[in-house]
Image (cartoon, rainbow, N blue to C red; front, side, top):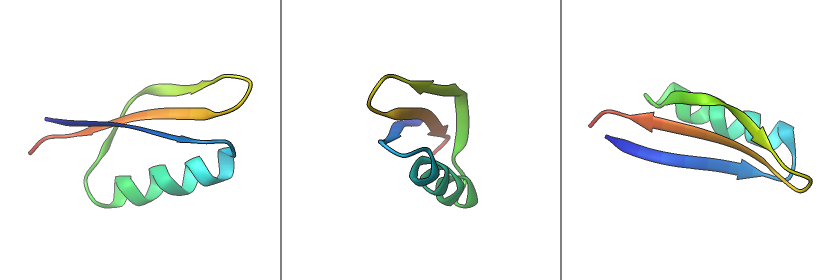
Length: 47
């Protein structure tokens, strides 16, 4: 299994990153996490 955490200061950029990864086989792991500076989304894929 491969695991990655995407992040961006802007939710729109994170959405673009997530959508691009979903198109090539990655899956979401949990929901979006945010702090006062960034948004995060964990993703994974089986190799």
